[in-house]
Structures are given as structure tokens and as C-alpha cells.
Length: 351
Image (cartoon, rainbow, N blue to C red):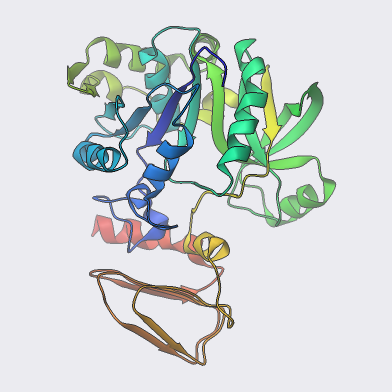
């Protein structure tokens, strides 16, 4: 990367409820090693470490501060700062906090979720290099994933005019379409999945927030202005931050902005948003099973089977199921219905 250094902003406040029972409020999925030996957070940090990148700024829940510091220390990440949300207020408020806390308005911010899998980091960095000149000219940039199925759980982006060097204007955002619309968008080759990764300078982002989400920006500014801090931790003022409307960054800013660029990229991306997604990125055996931990499968095909804490899981005569044995709970459901897990996790938390 060329100077100025990009400031990575790693969003780490998600609850990961769709990966219950392994993911929990105390240890959400970004802190788990779901794809290899490193946790998803540690993988995210590695992708934005090296020449051209400043030490990262992590926007996270304050209850996870010590856990984050331990995981960063384990991979030798130095100089990171933690911007600790007193309570979750969705992604618009989280990104607004980062923009307000940025060193100056010219700083490029690369906003990445902490809980995604990217199998080709080199392709990711190349896409960032493609987007950087546009970001420096004031564009709000995002990154689009070529769809391979009519996914109804993702946001989609319709591609507009070419902006040169592999970038396109964003013509429209489509939020979690119905099945028939997703099938049309899959075949028209004019749409990509919204990865939830962004690149922009702080100044044009703050201007967009001032215009389209002023209440979010006002809350973030007041919270940072009255923040406390110890070491690498920044603690925004609780009462001010609680006034921020809970709205996603796409709804608050990206869908309303008039200079939005999309860089399509094939980088082996998954948001690991469900057990179905984890099966899709796994390595199946000769029977199509993706197994992890102490698992014995007989006459079983097409299943995701996962065990933790040394618990033995034995399955016989099953097809196309998800079987997950956590430390306290066991989950069993058909593949293809994993989006329902969030409702179960929410119900259990309420009770």
C-alpha cells in the first residue's frame, strides 16, 4: 500500500447468535477458531497487518476487552487501540465512533468485520489497492462478492457504470431479497453480494453522516468527546452513546450516498453467518460429511458434525443434518434451516 497509511477499523461487537451453541454472548464467534487454528478475529488482524497499514482500531463490546487483548497478544499485534462500546447500537454508530476517533479527516479507514473468512488475503489486498484512489477522491467504497446461489440472507448491490481499474458505481442496494428476486439477480450478472467491507476517508464519511444520519453522528461525537481512556482502551461516554439510533451502516449511509463505488472481488469470502455457511467452507470427506472434534459417523452422509471439549459425538444413519455438541448444549437440525438458530438463541437468552 502507498501512503498515507490505511487505518484498519475492525468491527468486533457482534453477538454471533446464529452459531449457537458454540458462540455465546460471553465468547461470540469472532473469538472462536472455526476455520483453522487462529480465531476469526486473529485472521482479520493478520489480513490488515503489514506495509501500508497502521495498527488497527477495534470497535468492540467493552465486556470483551480483556479477551480481545489476550487474542491480539497471542499473535503479536502491537499498538492496537480498542474503542469499547458501552452497549451495541448497530454498525452505523460503531463506524461513526471510528470516524470521529480517526487521527484526521484525510485518513483512509478500511472497515472490516472481525468474523468473516477470506481464503485469499492477496486478492483482498489487491481489491483494497484498487479502491484506494477512489477513496482518496472522496468516494465511499465497498467490495462485492460474485454470487454463486440465490442467497436471501445477504444484501445485494446492483452494479452501475465502470469507474476504471476494476471498480463500478453502485446503482442500488437490495436488502435480503425474496427468493424469486435473488434468482433473477443471480442470472443477470449485474449484481454482487454486499460483503460489509468498506474503504473511505474519514472526512467524506463524516459529511455523509452529517447529512443522512445526524443523530448517529451527534451521539458518536459527544461520546468520544467525553470518553475515558486507560492504556489502549477508549471508553466512550455511556449516556451520550445510548442516544445513537440503532441502524445499520448500509441503511444510514451507503444506500443514500451519491458517490458509492464497488470493487468486485473473488477472495474466497464467507461471512460464516450460519452452520450452513460453515459446512460450505469446510472440507468434506468421501461421504460429504464435514466433521470437527471427537466424531464417529457411520452410514451418514452430507452432515456437519462438530464437537468441543472432547465430547464424543456418534451419529448413525443420518443424512443432511447439522449436529453440534457444545460444552452445555446440543443442536440438531436439517441443513438448509440454520438461519432459525438465531431465534432459538434469542429465546434461550430471554428465558
